[in-house]
Structure formats: C-alpha cells, structure tokens
Image (tube, rainbow over all chains, first blue to last red; front, side, top):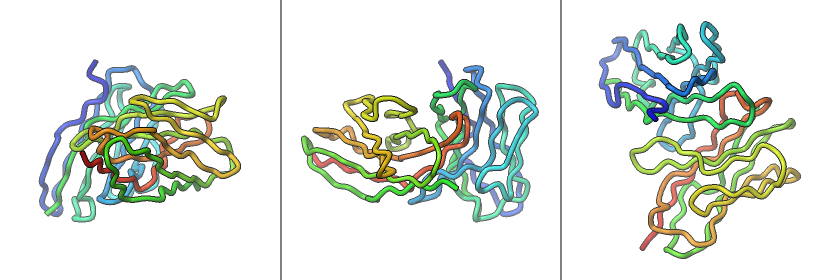
Length: 113
Length: 114
C-alpha cells in the first residue's frame, strides 16, 4: 500500500519563487491535511479539506493556498516563497468515519534562501 | 482553542530503563488523544490512540498511555526501553468526531543509550 505520497522530498527555492508541494493518497480518505514542522516545535496545521471542492484554513494559512479537485490529491502552493516558510511539510489523511487516526506522508523538506 | 504541553523536550535514558513522557492538554470538551513517533528521517507513525472507553490504552512496540480526565493528561509509558526507541515523540489532540486537524505538542526527543 502506498498510503500518503508526497513529492518532492527536498527542494531549495529562492525568495519570491513559487512552487507546489504534491500530496496524493490511495486510501479513499475524505479528509486531508497539510502541516508544517519547524525545529523544536510540534506540527502546525496549515490547511485541511473534508472532501473534494472543500478546503478550510488551519492555524497558520498565511502565504499558502490549497485546492482539492479530486479525493486523492491535495496540493499545497507557495506563491511568493519567504525565508519564514523554510520548514518540513507533512501531508496527512484520514477517513470520514470517526475514531480514525491520521496517516502521514514522508514529508517535504523545503529551504527558502 | 486547544493546546498541548509536553513537559520534557529532551530525555536521555539507558537501555532497560522505564519511560514516562508527560502530556497535558487544554480543552473543555470531548477530545481524542494520540501519541505519534517520528524516527530519524521518517514520517510520523501512530503509537496509540484514545477515543473513549478504557483509559489505559496499549499501543505498538510495548507502549501504553493512560488518560486521566481530571488531570487533562495522557502520559506515555514503556516499562523497558530499547536503543531502537530513540526518536521524537509527539502528543496530539483533536476534538469532535475526530476529523479535525490535530494540535500537537512540541515533541520530546528521546535518546536511548546502549
């Protein structure tokens, strides 16, 4: 089982560049999430989606955008990269039924220079 | 808003020692509680979870946690740690039906010395 797949694994961007972090899951999960993990900190929720066509902001959404055109895919876009967005980004998903834990991808390590 | 506090940021133990990692949360309603582990260079893996029922929860790899509602705590325990338990441990909480995004603690970096 592939589970939650994130690409790329590593990326270096220059300030002001844009990029899209890809996330796809093959478990038919309705709910998907994007988190960022900064050194010495826990993960913080950026955006989440409860189904195709529905997205909502989490705790730290500024500087990011998401879309959910299909159940499987939940890309995260950085329009104007800033050094403060240097972080490790994790995508996660879970089923709509209650009492289901979130499954995480391997993460994308992003550096903005 | 929910918050999660993990008491120890760094813990160093010898093999076979007993482990207890503290976790407290703040939220007045019904919560779902989780412990995740992150081995070096890997993604987060679920150790155990609590939604309801028996407050003593058993997880993988010999870990267990006890939910004490009156103390808003969900401490992680293991009677005898192994070198392979070296990792980052995160306590997390969400509310409602369990589909909300998770609120994480800052993590505890556990180092087991052989």
